[in-house]
Image 1 (cartoon, one colour):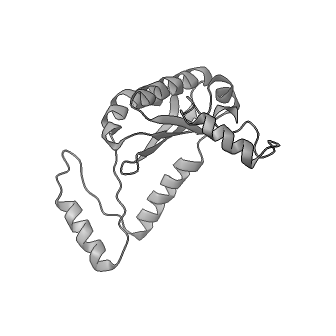
Image 2 (tube, helix red, strand yellow):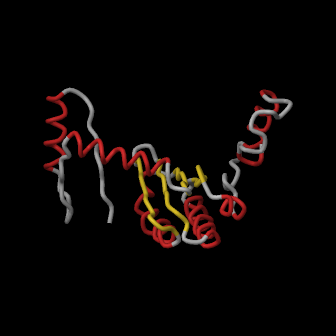
Length: 174
């Protein structure tokens, strides 16, 4: 089950029209709820906390058309390996975030590696924005280096020839 949040910004007349149009869309078996200012503030505060607080946070990049596949094949095994799992997605951007507290480091790292493999099969990527030390010891933060790695290394060498800026903290150990 997913909750979908939509935020409109603009002038009052435009907001009212957008909200009314959204309310007319078929919601399947779901429901539609308009949040008041305080409720909306609380909701978006929880949203922001999910992007910054859990000890493990993975960023997924994939085509919006692959969201259904990700929901079916990637999320269930991830959710099973984490306590308090959460998933945020911005489909028009092709970006998502999975967050949670690992139930056990080895199974969480295995679930992240399997999720990465599935997302990469779809042409996307999964990187760890944050992870516990145990998980970082078991899985590479960046995943499979992109084909442009030689170009990235060349740019890094030109811009930081003494390798003093965040050494080893970029994709491919750059």
